[in-house]
Length: 187
Ligand SMILES: C[S@@+](CC[C@H](N)C(=O)[O-])C[C@H]1O[C@@H](n2cnc3c(N)ncnc32)[C@H](O)[C@@H]1O
Image 1 (cartoon, rainbow, N blue to C red):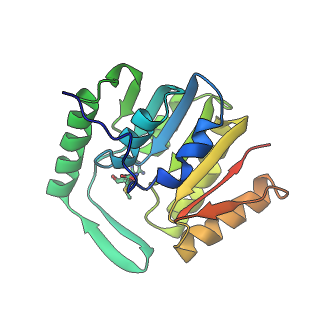
Image 2 (cartoon, rainbow, N blue to C red; image 1 turned 90 degrees about the vertical axis):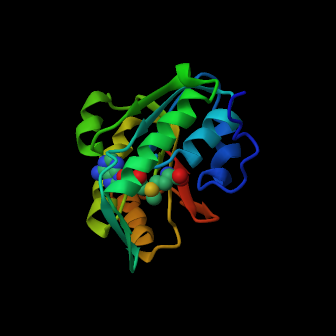
């Protein structure tokens, strides 16, 4: 028996699943910030048009400050997330589609050519500066016509960062948002 996340309607990526479904065949996609793999496995199982799904997570202790409250993830939480993500991928029945890079996103980005991803879901940022950095640095890696998307639209910090970068890189783009996700199709 393998895991089946295809009907998981509670993951952070759930509002974007149909949009990913419209992007075409043999997609190469990315989740930045995999944690225990809830959204990752949901994409993997609910989007048969994905050929390769990259995931990045450094699995380090951190403090999440984007909602003002400081949410603490300590060493043992990080280790558990790392174990669960790897375990779920191993038993996903689709591990051949997965590339999980357990390193910092600022290091991992060096492995990717510009315009090489059909979509990205950004869910790493813990602060305004990190949101600016992650959104700005990963935008060029998405193909023209690809989906540039992320989580935590309900955070004012993220909302401000998304609009700031959008105005820098693609002022005419219309940011759509729903159920705590944001995104736009890159021109
Ligand atoms: C909010 S959680 C992601 C939740 C996941 N996307 C989901 O929907 O289930 C954020 C994750 O980003 C990771 N992270 C934070 N900063 C990172 C960085 N600079 N490089 C790699 N991973 C990072 C954390 O370890 C954490 O697991």
